[in-house]
Length: 151
Image (tube, rainbow, N blue to C red; front, side, top):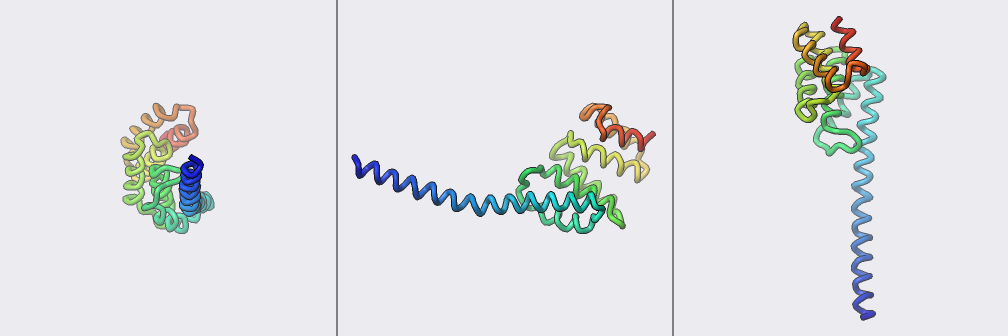
C-alpha cells in the first residue's frame, strides 16, 4: 500500500511540475499580448496612430487576453480613421467586424457613427445614435458625444 501511494504521489508531483512549466510560457505570452494591446491604446491616446496600428495588426491573429476581438477591431478602426491619411473604407470594415462580434459594442457604435458623419452618411449616423441610446443610455458619454456631433 505504501508503494502504491508513493507511486501515485510521484506521478501526481511530476504532472503538477510539468503543468506549471507549460503555464509559465503561456502566462508570459498572455502578459505580452496584454502589454502590447495596452501600449497600442496609449499610443492612440497620444495620437501616434501609425505606431498603434502596427501593434494592433500584429495582435490580430493572437488570442486576446484582457480584451476582446471586438475591442481590438474597434481600436483598429479608430486608429485607421484618425491617422494623418485616414482610410475610411478600412476603418468602416474594422468597426463592422467589431460589431459582428459584439453588436452592442459601445465604442464601435459611437465611432462608426462618427465615421458616417465624417463621410456625410447622416441617416446611418442617426440610426447608430438611436441604437447607442438604447444600448448605453442617453446619459452615456458615448451617446452625448455622438449626439453633439450630429446636432
